[in-house]
Image (cartoon, rainbow, N blue to C red; front, side, top):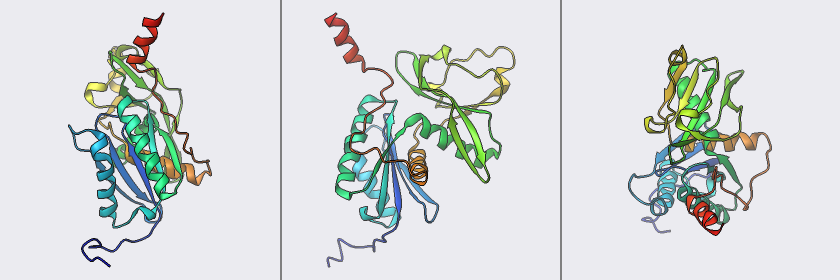
Length: 253
């Protein structure tokens, strides 16, 4: 055995890999259902996702002291978000699971953001907001968003989807009429709210934008609920057609 190539002993366990490349940056996470351990890393800024995604996964495996054979399932963000990032993430994950031979689950990026933000919020505040509203930049002064309702079941909490994905102008994002709202978005991707009346007293903010942990945890949840894997026919959630395709269609007509 080559001691240099095996400078650490790989431990075979059950780990779930989460991949989120629905933003320009992206990130990866590992969770161990057996040990309730979470490891995550964001991809380097300013470098193409296609160049850094696989090395980031390998580095995280090394940090966990495991090999690819310890990955029992992979979750990947389907979007909405960056068209290019989503395509790179899906292509990379499809190749990875083909080599490992494990199931793959497609997860909405908005679901992953809501789940991750809720867990982080509870660590800080230990109080459930009434609503969670994750937002993603959709370009052209528009946002992708969806509304979620936090649910407590014993000692577990979950962000339950309460609406379909919405594409709207920043000042037209639908806001619930009552209750505290946790808006999940960095400052540049937040909706432009009319702070008349008491709405300013009801709005809370999370700056979270990359949610590989949420992708991994929702994959774990899908497995525990015996939901069938997505299989090789993973389809991205673009939210709308890419602009180039829209322009091409309009030119034809």
